[in-house]
Image (cartoon, rainbow, N blue to C red; front, side, top):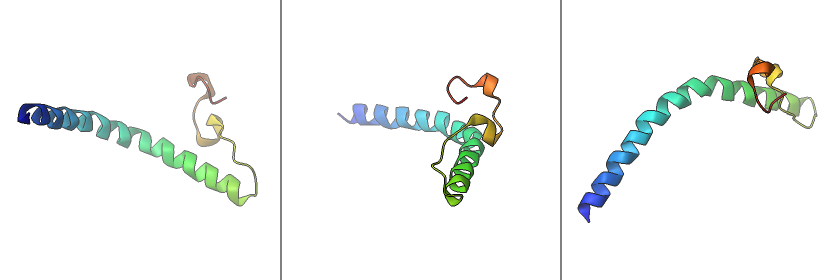
Length: 65
């Protein structure tokens, strides 16, 4: 039984090592999207996400045009 928990701990640590760099790489884009959302709310608009508003190239996105 302990071996199963030890294996679970090891795999969770592995997933953490993979996810942390991804969070750092995507964090800037997420903050830009949050700031754009808050800006639209302050203007009294119903916030709508558009990739070009946060500096993403629309030709490189599949959904956010």
